[in-house]
Length: 143
Image 1: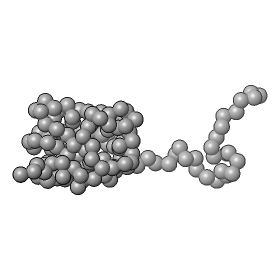
Image 2: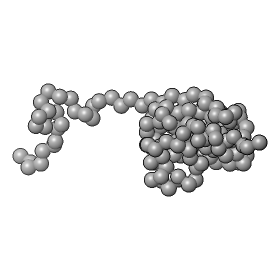
Image 3: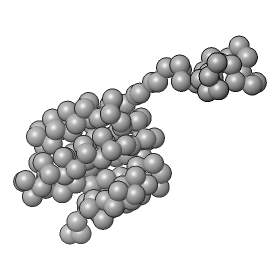
Image 4: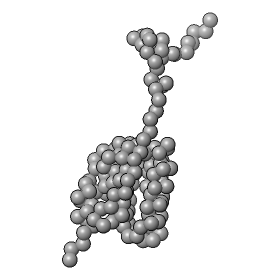
């Protein structure tokens, strides 16, 4: 008999009768709405941006950018998770806007999205605002 045994989470001490965590379903959700700010077009993103939901975000952003003019705002206030797929979507959106010399503003309070952008070294690449009010104030030009 082999000295190595396969570890089975359902037979681990203290787990009698419990299902292993790995079998729990994974639920990804993302809600995207139009969210203009101070007459500037934009989208609000709520939920998780990962490999499963990033394509939907990319499609929504491309459609909104093509249908608009000038600066564009993405509000991540209610976004709870962002992975490398989401970062790639942001970089592609920034490039799409950059071709027309348009700017991308992110409403990004302290939390998951801002932390990921900082860890990737992209905090300085994007124009970040902690609140919608801060972004709106920056968009309003003095008379």
